[in-house]
Image (cartoon, rainbow, N blue to C red; front, top):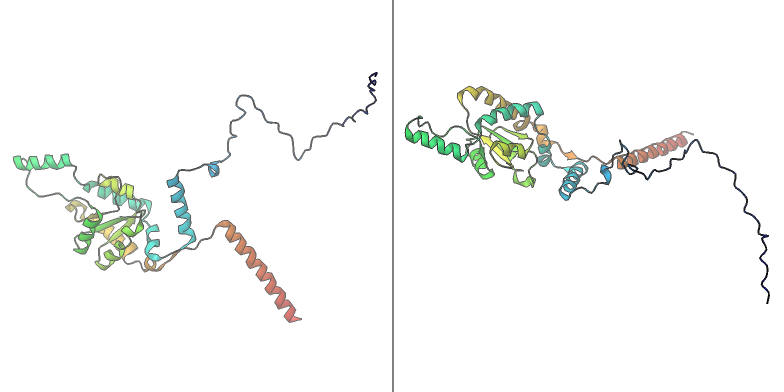
Length: 258
């Protein structure tokens, strides 16, 4: 049987007219050449970074402290002394860093050889939670510094109350790593001064007065609750709800006046 001849009578597709460029949404074709995958400068992608777990935990803790109602005994640890005051305090404490084992050995050698007078152990910082607690209970501590970022906070939660009861001046400072540097440790929750040299007594008294004024006798610090700050979305939702209620109330008042 003869094959049917193929007819080229198919309708040709209509030619589309060239579309005009939209001025509102200009075409920006992507370049996949060298350097085409470089991130544009000025775009912050930190929100999309998978941060390490400890970073996520400390950020979530900070947000929770803002959202939840925080009792005064915990909230007081957010009220550390200022940067300039802290610099002055740490300058004084830096003079009384504890001896290293090598320094102690050298001092004992010189004392034994008779080169130095046996004047006893020099004034130095005391650290360690149990040791400082004993010094506060015996009223031997002249000034106590407590770190603001101790974790868990329960370790030092009771210490401000003890210092107030025993009338020992204390300060809350930033942070445990900075206190740890003073005493040759990684971190330190609390340090205390029991005494200073004669030339630093006036400076110590100034810091004692500052601690009594800002922390020991500060009644607002002992009563003020913290937290209760909602997020931006929740604040916007509450504002919208409050406006709607105000409009509804205005309508009711207007209807009653008729």
